[in-house]
Image (cartoon, rainbow, N blue to C red):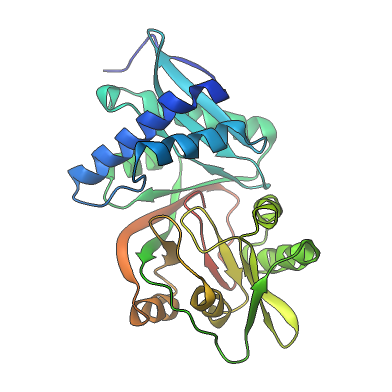
Length: 288
């Protein structure tokens, strides 16, 4: 039964503790129900994640309340032209009551008001309810993605140079992204440059790929699969649950597995609106 008295409002920094708790409990409950490790390993990580989204000017946040009690939240990453959804979380005590649908419709309306050409998200393959929700809202399944994790590979590939990115690389990174995806993700690259996590790969003296980090909440793009192999091989670690490797890039996924990484879970990349089949190699973030 739907919660009729549900109200939605913009999120604020003061909501971080409660929304973070719900985020942790919701993801943990669903993961444990299906015998998978949780994406959010602790309440503290959940609070930090939600606080970061609530206080970042490039994110839109919405909070759901019922009888004055916070029961869920959702976010829209607006740092680039194509927007990414998540995390969308609902208090386990009110799941399957229409809260998630209301939160999704809110961010979809926000994207439409902004004139965003496309909306994207990733969802856990084991969570059939969320897959059905997104499909019913008009999302299309675009790719199956493997989340892989393991020890750092720690080696260089001959002919490829991986180095820390600088502000001067932003234009080249955007060029590679547009070549592969038809759009750039310059807002995310700019944030990664400020955080010091961005890396580029060079081949024959020019930038042929980049990674905002090698992590669950980061993305990477390369002209070719070996460009991404070089970035992955040089990473000091893989942040969070792991990196996201499109299963259709079987050469890259097999290479990851042969270098000691293991598949944690399979996920679905889903989209509404503008979507170009990638012309090159890429790792999505958990947002897209």
